[in-house]
Amino acid sequence: MKSENHNSSSRRDMIKKVAATSAAAFVGQSLFNRVSAAEALLSDDLKGHINHSVCRWCYGDISLDDLCKGAKAMGIKSIDLTGPEEWPTLKKYGLVCALTQGAGKGIGEGFNNPKLHDELVKSYEEVIPKVAAAGFKQIICFSGNRNGMDDAEGLKNCAVGLKRLMPIAEKHNVVMVMELLNSKVDHHDYMCDHTKWGAALCDAVGSEYFKLLYDIYHMQIMDGDVIATIRKYNKYFSHYHTGGVPGRNEIDESQELYYPAIMKAIVDTGFKGYVAQEFIPKRKDKLASLKQGVQICDV
Image (cartoon, rainbow, N blue to C red; front, side, top):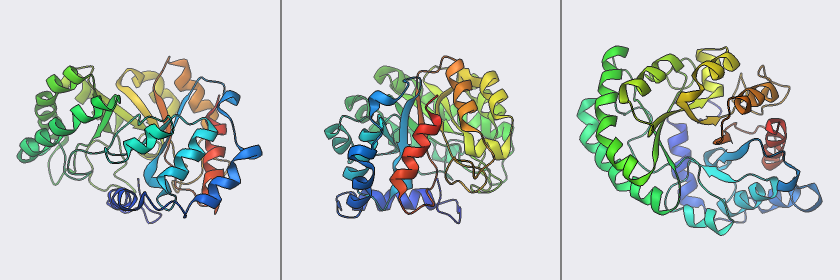
């Protein structure tokens, strides 16, 4: 969710940049060409155990059209973290948005602050029907930063605010998904930074329309024991993100996580949702890195 300096606001900035420049097709065309035709990984070649997605913000210098073309050729079915203005482009290529952007105030200002509840509820009430109308099923949300608040109070506050939105989420069959983020490297002071806390919040909200995004990169930094955590807490997870540790880059042999084993653990839980690549490519040919990531995770 960040640029290479990993500051806490960079994903927000990148998403804004992407939305403003998504029509600029010329930037990524050569990259698409390099992974198309004979080089492309066709969807028929995938095993089908993982529903593959990719996060839009990681490819901000590639036009949305070209990212969609490349993703489609690789067998990717979804572009994560896009908003309503981008969904027509996804649909043009037969893609979905497995986890939508488009509501709330960002990562640092979330449901742990009761003073923001009215504004947050209004924002989600406006966007959730749009998500449903587009045929999508999930929207992202955040706890917000602690700002001196203890975790128990923050959990209680989040539950109060989120419960206000469960009726409209249920009405439109849209799941609100809170992301687990690390507060050690990238999002200092973020509250939903441990799986155990997020699972307790799910229990407190008490609805199947509130789940967690288990970001493997972030939770390796905070909790470790990724496979054991997936086995223990998988009922709370409705979405997964990838990323290399350390550095948030390619998920290959350059980093400490072994993604084939992690993906097998996810499949073994019976998970039928999406796994989205959310690493920041270091290589010049970013779509080739994305293709490699899909292949690594296709167990």
